[in-house]
Amino acid sequence: MKFWLVIPAAGIGSRMASDRPKQYLQVAGKTILEHTLDIFLPHPQLQGAAVAVAEHDSYWPDLPLVQHPLVRQVVGGQERADSVLNALRVLPNLGAQPCDWVLVHDAARPMLQRTDLDRLLSTLKYDAVGGLLAYPARDTLKLADAQQRSQQTLQREHIWHALTPQMFPLQLLSDALEQALAAGVAITDEASAVEWAGFKPRLVVGRSDNLKITYPEDLQLLAAVHEPTGLVDGVIDV
Picture: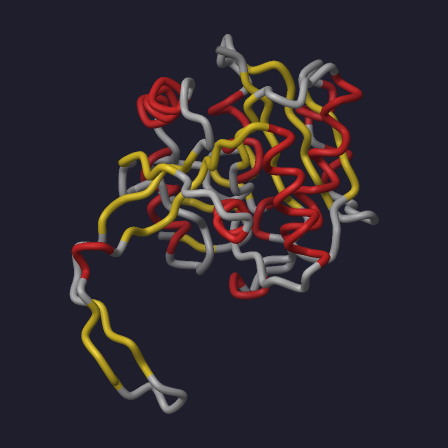
């Protein structure tokens, strides 16, 4: 099977408290975004990648991967769902068909393992809906009120942590996002739009270390993988 890739990379990553969007922070001589794309670009089944960046992004043009023959830049939107939808609309111009598989992956999730990627592809290739990588909750989970006081202990047996990639047919995902956005639905990930459209995405077990870089301390794990000295350029010395 073949697939297309969408990377929403137009966010500013305010929780990282850095001088640039978090996807452009550097570890081991490469930006987080480059590490993320390095997972997918060598894959023999990848047909193309649409990366949605901010309209006036001054960092993207300096990346070597801009010249990669499989990579296409797309102008991102105000929210994640807008960026993903903009990228999906470009894919048919690159040769994608309505029934082709599309994988949407976070720009700041650079620790995806190839084994998880291949498991997702093989598990879902005959699925009518698609699905996403996820892993079952391990810890006790609490439901909090507005004052951050625990109201209830949730039954974790049916709770999963959603990861990316999330994998759906191009037309199904495009329609779900367009309709959900038109209805004013809050879309937190692609699966939530597909769920709102009445489908049930399949959960494919993935590794819990498929971490999304969100806070400064998350960089320590990425640095440990890529750089024995622990130096993260311009951000933190672990």
